[in-house]
Structures are given as C-alpha cells and as structure tokens.
Image 1 (spheres, rainbow, N blue to C red):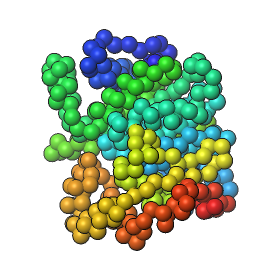
Image 2: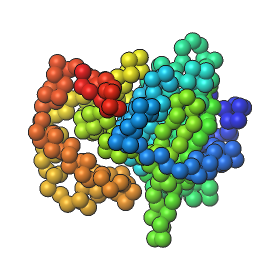
Image 3: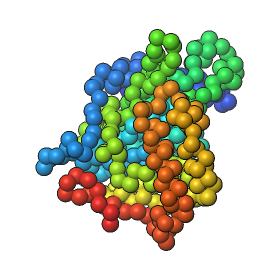
Length: 343
C-alpha cells in the first residue's frame, strides 16, 4: 500500500499496465517532483576512509550492486551506495525505530523477494508499521515521451530499456503489498536524467546515503577506500550470483545488523566464470564497456579497471571454495582506525 503526503495513493489503470501507470503518476505528483528537485539541489557528500580520521568519525555501511543491508542507527550513521546507472537504490526506514534498509536493485527479477528480505527486520508486529521509502537511481536509457503521447498498449510495447521496467516493478510491488509505504522521494528516470549537447542521457547522480538518525537522503559518492570491506569478492558475487541457484530472485546478504559486522555470504562461481575472465581480459577498454555495461556512455571512470581486477582474482582463484572455505561467510568487524578487520 502506497501513501503520498499521508494519503493512500491510487490510480485508474488496467491490470496489464498497472505498474507503469502507478509509476508515471508518482513521477508527476507535485510533492514528489518537489522532493526530487530538493534532493538534486543538495551538494554531493564524498566518503573516504582517509578523510574520516577524527575520533568522532562517521560510521557507514556501503552496499554494492544487488546487495542489501539493514542497519541500526545505534551502530551506523550512514548507509548508502553508488556506481548506479540503470540500477535503482531503495531505502525503507521504520519511522518509529529508525531501523533502515538499503538495497541496490539491478533487475525486476529480484524485486519481490528482495523487498521481503529488506522488510524482515523492519516490520515486527502486524501491518501497522509506518515505513518511509526513497527510490533513487535509474535514468532515461530510453525516452519516455511516447508514454505520454501514445496509447497504453503502444507505450507498454515500446518501453524496454533497463531502468523503466525495474522502477515499474518496484512501485507495483510496493503498491500490492499490505504494509504502509510512505513515498518520500522518487528521483528516478526523467528526474535523474541529464543530457549533453549531443542529446546523450546520463544519470544526474549515481549514489546516495541515508542518515539513519534523521532519515534524510543526500547525494553521495564513495572512493575506493570507502567501498569496503572485501570489495573484489563482493563485486564478483554480483556476476556469479546469476549462476548460483541459491541466490535466484534474492538480494545478496552482506551485513549483520545485530553485531554491526559484515558477513559476506558465500556465492559459488563455476569454471565458466574463469574462462570468461580469461577471454575478456584481452579486449580493449571500449570493447569491455560495450560488452559488459547496460549503459556504456554513463559508467564511471573506474568501471573497466574494476572489471579487470575481478577477472584477475577469478584467474588466480578459479575455485570458489578457496574464497569461502567450508561454505562459510567472510566476516569483518570494525577496527579502531575506521576500517574493517577480517575475523
């Protein structure tokens, strides 16, 4: 159940296009348009371990693509993600307790179960919990102009791309569930799109954090020192999870909110991943962008380098059991210097 400005949100639509109609109506809601504009007006906060050196340094939890984490404001000041192009970041926060779940969703196939995973630690008793929701990311990798000019059936047939189907699935799933979701921000698609002089589209921004104490969401970016712990293994889990049936339809489990520890759940990769790494490492940067990205012109400057580092790891560690002995998670606790130490 979706609420906007405290009132139940409804729209007249056919069952075949319900998700699309709900999404388009939310994108045109004046309050939500204003919220997107306010979000974009905020300066981007840059996160770096090296810059957080004071005793009162902020504590944050970073999530990669297809991961989620539910955090307790007693332990964590910020939770967030970046590197999103066609992906969508989802924030769900319990208004009463401040418990906050953040996910980096990359496919409509993981939305239904992924939202259930996020809600498992947010909703205790019954369905009366009031939940704030922020949706941030995705951009117009295909034009939405025809959605306003054509018939519903014509528009639905043309709306392919990556961002729109994902956004549509998210809002439809929220609308269909019985929990009370108060949409506070929906900075997606056209609201998160900028254009260059040639008409190419790019995300307005690629990342954000939520301040757990207040629920405020701000644009953010993270450098390589702050995308931790276990960066390379976590990146590899994203691609290998597509072949690991134990993760079908699920977000990747990453963080234990009760202990404030990262528990990188095991994910197995096959020798096929090893052979793919061997074959792709010889391609040029431009070829890798074209082959491996859903939005080649919108990726960050370190996209290809990150892929090459993953492939090097897979070539050096072709058997996943070397990384996850006895199928156990890789556990990391916070260290006194603001980083993470392997347990």
